[in-house]
Length: 221
Length: 315
Image (cartoon, rainbow over all chains, first blue to last red; front, side, top):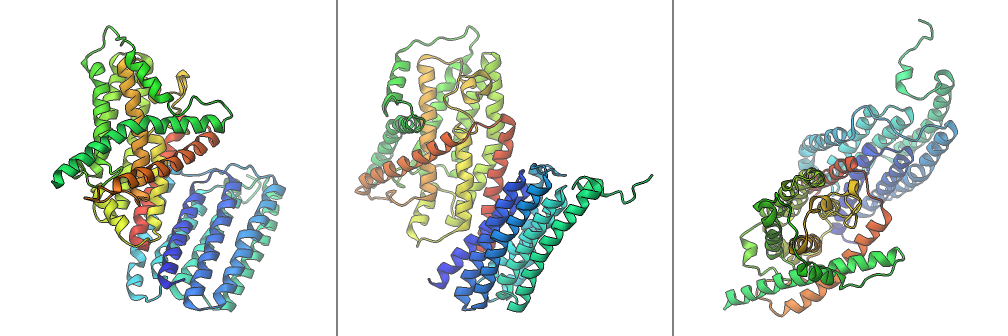
């Protein structure tokens, strides 16, 4: 595999990661969101492996394997069990309607392209062009967290944001040191468990996972 | 001498478009019948339908104006003109230089505009309803279509179709995310523009779900034949436009007369595959509610826009 082909495949994967971000933004069903999130993880893992191969950095293979194990299988499974156990309604409710959300998403992509343009000029890595996509993924993850009403969908938004950060690290500097990445992976896994416990407690004290029910902190009045 | 060759190829292409379009529709219908476990009428049935309609008398409403009578001819003429612009078998088209992609979209819009006017001309409820729905779909599909085609224009550096085909076939094959996204958008738009499931059902005569069929409900005889034929050509042209933009390998270049038979064979193979994909989509999906169509086309627009952005960001 030549470097040119690797760059092409990597940019196709970057486009797919961006596409799954938009998919998460417009998806109405909660299981559909989980499936899209798993796909995003798969593209991310493949992209990391390809960057590792072209750059000759073997610790990226470990990162790719971790991403595959955690973000494609473990986290979607944990969230699936959580949704199933807590009997959350499968429809996702949004604060802003879908076409508007999509247009905001497009605006964010253009914004992150302009924001990363100077870095792109300075960088010499083969992955420099995917940095804009990585930043856009982070921002769309934030947008998902803002526009969704349920705690579970906000968690998916948060995890998509983390995917974006991971992708940014790979494309800007060929990934963080392995120790850091192992730590982050462990954090994410533990966060997923803590979210699960949180959701359980939130539901027992508020009887729902809707954010608007959590605004009131005291029970009296 | 060269101009004579070009004119011959142009004439041959128009003949191919006129003759093959019903066969393509027949192929799609036949596959659909097979996929749904019905006996099919064969690939030649659209030709028999057209012949029967041409023999029948025209029944006109008492208050039909000249718009109603001329609309089938305008729509048919505009569609055939589009067939003379798109490089279906060769890029060596004298008419191809007169109009680029933007004009091509406008030519399709003329046909649709007159059909929609004719739908409202008689004053029946269904005609007006069909026209209003058709224009709603069109107003959303056209910007998405232009965005999708512009993405390929950016890659090729030109808006002339022949030039776009030449640039894409000449260079080395490159994986381009922008082209992939534009293709996805183009497929969604093609389904909406040619009135296939899940946007519109070409076979329905159920009053409330019709879009295109409601608009042309009052037509009969040779008028209906022309409109149906124009519809078949439109489906054929969208399929071959998709082929020309995304898999143009096999289309003859300028002054390559010997390429024409090869081009016809490769076109037949590609359209056969397009037909199979179309039937798979149509049998797997159910028709969506009309108020979901804006969202469907919104997705197409977003895909096309992302394609355009990824051309700047990633290439």
